[in-house]
Image 1 (cartoon, rainbow, N blue to C red):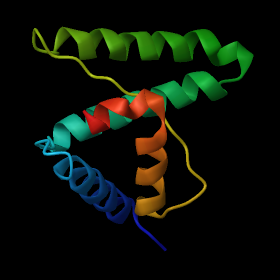
Image 2: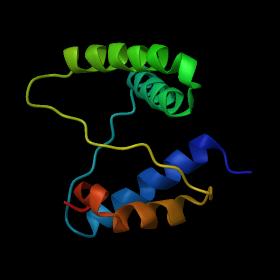
Image 3: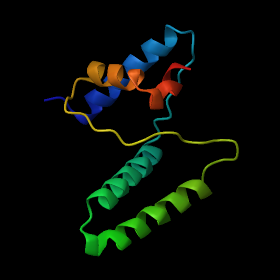
Image 4: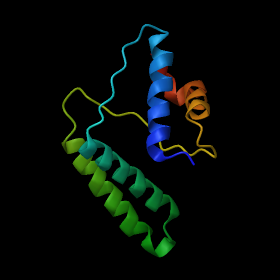
Length: 110
């Protein structure tokens, strides 16, 4: 089985190689606290998308609280662009190729 860490490392490598081929510098902020915070946000998005109707308002409120905290701690002149994605494969190369081909991830090639 491919682990989460193997998938992440494979994606980092594939995207960096792609960008290096275009003479683009790539750096990754791998601070554990930041990664945990962003993963929490993804979990909250999932919770909103899958909540039973009677829990929907609660799930939305939790996501809104997270977003407020996220934007309050984002430095001026910085932004995060991204969307949650799902794949039926654990192959980092296949995932990277799919991401790089999607217009919403064009920033990976710029």
